[in-house]
Length: 118
Image (cartoon, rainbow, N blue to C red; front, side, top):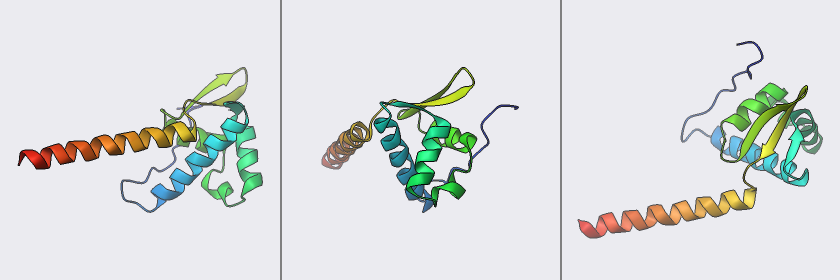
C-alpha cells in the first residue's frame, strides 16, 4: 500500500540475524532514551549511522526503521506528527531486560512444577 513501511525480512527463531536485530533494537532504545523517549525517525537514523556506518545497509531508510520498530510493539511505537514520522519508546532497555528476566524465572518455575508432577 502507498505510504506503508517497506517490508524488512524478519528472520525466524534460531536464525543468526536475531542477534543483529536484538542489537539494533537495543541501540534504537538507547537513542530514544537519550532523546527523552521520542524522536523523528530521520534523527534516529542519523544517530545510528553516526555511531556505526554498518547500520546503513541494515536500516537503509526511515521505512525500514519503522518496520523494525513495528516488530517490537512492546518497546516502541511509531506515529506521525505533522509531516514527520516519530518513534516513541514504550519500554526502556532496562525495563525490557527486567521483564525478560522475570519471564525466564516464570518459565523455569513452570518447568520445575511440571517436572515435579511427573
